[in-house]
Length: 476
Image (tube, rainbow, N blue to C red):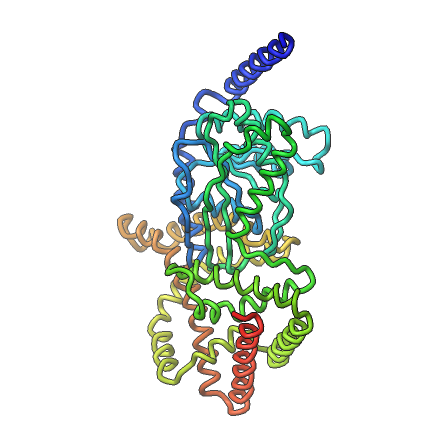
């Protein structure tokens, strides 16, 4: 009994020393908000807004206040996933990221400023795993100061609407921190679902859902009795709470077919069943249920599902044969002569805006993208590289435009506001370009040759039948 008491006292004394040492290493102001970080975030958030057509945030009320928080988001799109959180809540969250991105001194300095710390995996070398102890000590200090931390439960991105198996990093950090504080911190884990309409296209839509926080009170006894089992149980609970916040396509064999059916029938599904008044959330919930019903169909009626896949393949083959895309057919289906003529008039009227936006944004927009496309092997990093390069190249290009074009012609009071107008002109030009393409396809369908119109009408009918079949077979 005395030996046990002595061990506990020694352990408590060591914990106090450890925390004091970590606090000394990291400085007394580690829990204070950084003004420079906040200024950078304003710029990053503005750029993030420009790169998306719509950003919808749900569940912000679930973010706790005045307690330590660990965010646990799904991971599909490299750097864009952390930015989805950084740009949609006010907390200055410290991120834990894989250690291999910290190799250069410059990278370490930048990442440290951005509140990103390394975490080592077995692939980084067994000898480096011991470094995680110091990182976990620093994280404990942050959480004890009621700050927020974020890391991905999957520990790697997938580039698919499929969550990978969760690791034990979050449960370990959370339970060890609470255990060192007698489970009196009130630490909460917030699952976060991140859903993109597309992973690397510019001007995509984004839905960020903050789920109900997980408290750790129920794990106190279990952790004291069996720490490993408690960690595994918490890991599974995080996975369970995160699943409703993401679109999960379980099938490996038919993943691309599920994705194609989601894109094809998603809008029609959203019109058939009401979930919520929020448009983006309504679309998400409709697509999620559609995927679930299709998976049930695959499991219970494999023959019917196989016939559906054959029908989908036939439609996609017809598109390829006619050198068209599903977007072309969708636009043609919605075309009307009067509406299309109005669109043509609007296209002519807006042409000056498009030309100006293109002239002052085409080089910094397209040149880096061409380089990234050629150099980056893993496609899922495309949007991250494009975004980071854009943060650097656009301001430099705009400065050159001011010095070489605007300053000689306009006063400072006029020239500077014009420079700040350029990114908005660029976004408008991109959106107008999509508008022009759609209007051209509609015009082509309505006013082109009879043969082209007949082919398009056949594809419109084939598409409509396919969507109806998908929804009918899925019992949606």
